[in-house]
Length: 108
Ligand code: FES
Image (cartoon, rainbow, N blue to C red):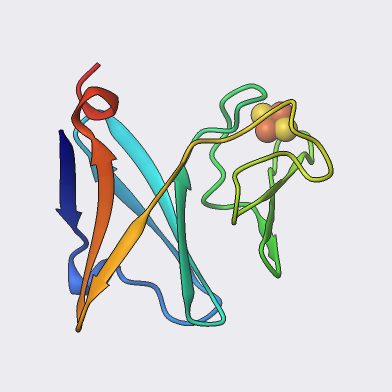
C-alpha cells in the first residue's frame, strides 16, 4: 500500500531551498531545484550523516561528512550505481504536494 503524505504548505521549499520532513520513523529532505522537487532520505548511505544540510549544486547534493555526492534525480552516488540514497516519487495536484511512500517503508 502506498501512503500519500501531504507536505504542509510551509514545508514546500522555495526555488533553490530545501526543507526537512519527519514522516513516521522517516527523516526526509525535500529539495526545490529550478521548481522541480526531489525528496530523499535524510541519511547518507555511507555513514548516515544528514543530507538536508549538504551542499547543493544543480541536482547534486554533497554530504557534509565525507563529501560523497548524490544525484537527486536517481539517488545514486554520482557516476556510480554502487551506493544509493532512497528517493521517493512526488505527486502535485494543483497547490498540493504529496510524497508517495510504500507503507512497508514507513513503519518497519
Ligand atoms: S556519511 Fe555521507 S559521505 Fe560519509
